[in-house]
Length: 149
Image (cartoon, rainbow, N blue to C red; front, side):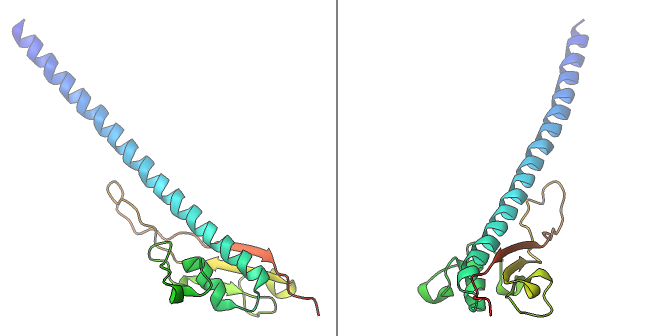
């Protein structure tokens, strides 16, 4: 009888370990997915902000990139720092009205600003699934206020 109780305690410990392991994987996976969603939304907001700035200032290609990077068209001149870690100007492509060779064909035929962010390496926890994850391209298009010739 006494031996049976000890065996049951061991069984409960093993079952608890299995349940806690599954719960731990679920929690870390939820945090990992939440972090991915946060960075995706932050990149989308940066692209939209740059496109909005570009719709009014459609000749300022560097300013559009700086708005995406620093949220300031002047860039680092005013002491601005990058809003999203590891985002660089090389990852931001700006298509202005009339540009040829843009990935967005509508920006060459219409008066549209297109801001594309590509090649951003997501920062993930790497606890459960170690990986290097590159986000899909994020594109923001907006009509410009360029006067029609």
